[in-house]
Length: 300
Image (cartoon, helix red, strand yellow):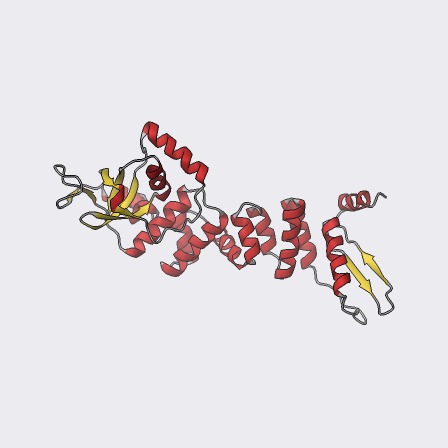
């Protein structure tokens, strides 16, 4: 590869592989003898038993059905896209990228797998694994955010440098990283696909974790749209004017009734109760359509 073409690859995965070499086993005795160093780009057959999983692999969830489907394809057509490994010793390799393909190959019963063999230090391995997964695998938003965080912390990258590595602008990187500040319950829902990235972006704008959890409950229970969550987030962020004497704290029983009503009407219902047991119920609405929805629920 000429220097001109190599420079054109930019700072992505290909640029990190500049110093790579391919290693072929001794052709008279596969897996024994001293590996032969060959020009970059050759595909090698590596015994699966000689490959250990990359400790820097950011992905933790692999869909069992998808793996089985890929394994069936491999049985019929072989593995089309080689994995990438680094040589640790003469007959020991460490996975850089392609764990999903490696797992499926094992399910398919392969004993050897096509691989590109690279040389890389641990930091390069981490960058390669993270970039390869972010760009090529269907990671959930939390896994992407964790990968971004690791690249910043462990590879000493700034957000704009990280954006260049993964071909994303800084605001996108920032939005992913902010997901990790959400309560664990919400992060788990994002990871499991119960809450979309659009919902998450709206929740991020709310500063109060209790309010975030309140809206999260409505999303998962009532299936609120992203637009509805954005409206609720704006409403909750508006400053509350404090006038006169503040009401007495609500009892646990009244708080429970308030929460149940809020869940029923998908809005933040407010109950006010004085020391004599008298009070009022306030049901806010965000638009005429929202008012019509609430009135319909009241059989008005």
